[in-house]
Length: 327
Image (cartoon, rainbow, N blue to C red; front, side, top):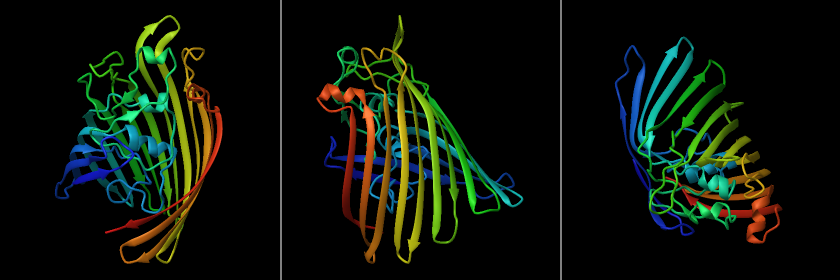
């Protein structure tokens, strides 16, 4: 599978999205084994089940999965085993990967976002104005798909589907970053790890509820009196309900997100708290053509916004629509 991305707001505008080979072995007594090799997103998001890692019924992802889209793309090998145990189904996934060493940079220095941005293999993000402390170390751009320390990261995922209209999953991710590795472009490796848990409830043929929650941390730099240069804990969660009305779908989502700056806040405060409410309607205009209308309200507080001359506490409401061709 190969996907290309055209995103005029990013640099470069045209980029490679995912590019991987998927292999499936014949069913056996062990179960069903499959594998992916190449460039892909880890199986974290429960929302992005559309073509090319998109949200079919909404124009934005949750804060949690928007961050995955921006900073957690890997190049590696992933193996999945599916096995039935009576009426239960178990799916276990393990992977080793590279090219995700800078993950955590954008989350620390810019904070959370709710969008549909997907990083490509050459994507660069401009960071907002940095504090005098941070700009001594961090370049003003970050490149999420970058290998710096030649260490292999890993993740493992387990999903349980009981004989009921519900399923549960859990994933642990660790990029094993060497937080003092840096290249000539001023890109540092971040030591980033998180636990993600999720639940899907298929309440009826037309209604489903998704729940996801994440807890993690990301660290960069040397140890000095007072701690590591940058040490950020992060948490995010959402609840999403969707109901189909014929060919149409209405969706509602509530988000909560935060970061916790653990070191040198007096010099470089990257703490953030926020929540969001999103509602959308997808209407089938014609075969292969949908109209999506979405309204979103986001409230958050982030002290570092003052570096750009903005108020730390902000409330924003956005109404947007789009035509989407679907195949």
